[in-house]
Length: 220
Image (cartoon, rainbow, N blue to C red; front, side, top):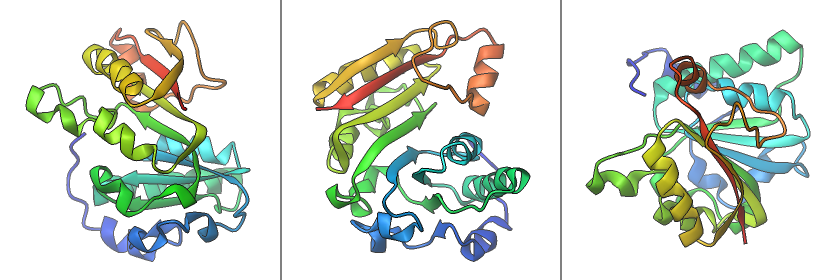
């Protein structure tokens, strides 16, 4: 999603207590940055405006979360949205960290010591043109990188509106050594998650009559 430049985003992020400005320095040490460092650690790749992460984290305070996006404006909105949800619930915000980073280079900020138990990928760019497909967050090149820090039997939760991306991703996960334990071509009619948190894109596509595809893949 393209978003207009927001001049306030960078200053707000730099002043934000749960924003990590230099994530490379936390490689292998992310758990230490949380107050409850013994909690399981989950990761969202491409968090956008943060509505999904905010709802997920505030309802699972026993899990710590890292949310990554590449665009300051997006992260600025995510920061505000996350803060507001915690304020509305009168809960201390202590189980989320957000950071700006290029996911293609993710092994510069995460490794096996970080022990990520679950990855969320929601409505990522489908990159439909052949020469750009390697940029897909579910491409097997990327999936092999995730296996470097995802725990044994760790899971990846993936949702998309795009038929071609979903079919290709089924192959990517298998090729990368993941086991697809659940999948659906119509998430709202055939739920596969314990509780589905509807994202902004998900609501928009569903209202247009587009079926939401989803899967859960396990790292073997």
